[in-house]
Length: 301
Image (cartoon, rainbow, N blue to C red; front, side, top):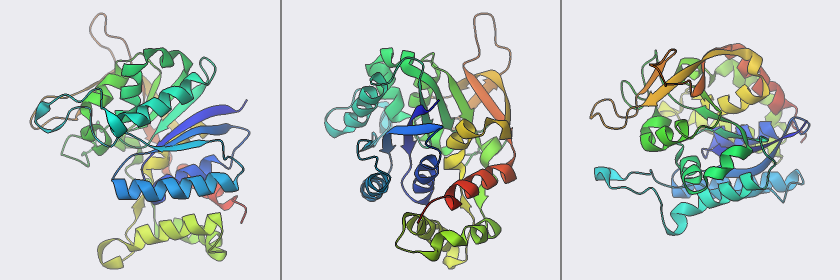
């Protein structure tokens, strides 16, 4: 069965590698919408590249749009839960794409903040019935956060959005930093991908060039390992066997001055508190890099 998927990506090499990998398994998943959220200039570039890539795969009907550019709650605690103008269009596109899919069919892979999905669930709660699952790159539980000491960047970017998604009653799989901190494009992995770059003008060559540029754009161009954690939601969908986890109830701290964005997990909650996520706590990093490598190397020039 081919599952419809929505990819809510971050712009740059990670996002393009994720999209390209997803297109290599047409019998397993088929994108029905691609979103990019981040800085406006970077998003515009990513949108153009994604449309070109999809066109070359004969998927001109797959919509590509910008996600919501800012958090649900702006600085100073002023509510922005129903953005106007351009800000709310990403959520509208998501609602339309999900409603067009049968019940319990579509999976959403989220590699960045959850603003667009949260707004879609607030504005159209009925879409929850169409979701087979949401897989989120986010959270930090037993490791140091990468936004603050206790918070992971995707959750910290919009804690209210994360809390909204977790409270929506939809099936959520959380892939935290505990799993993905070591999932990186290191020198050995990049050497394995060298065949991608043999035809620079090809799709594979362009994505390879973006990965190379991302590594060489590190400190003094010294080849700093690039995180691949944005690919983790897709890996969890395609290869769940390389992960392990358990059901848990996860809360998001939205108020604390020093703990805002912190994720707190409880295996057994008080009476009336039920698990709201499948929390993945371990992955085989080597297997994950291997799956992604093989998918990218299967790209036809």
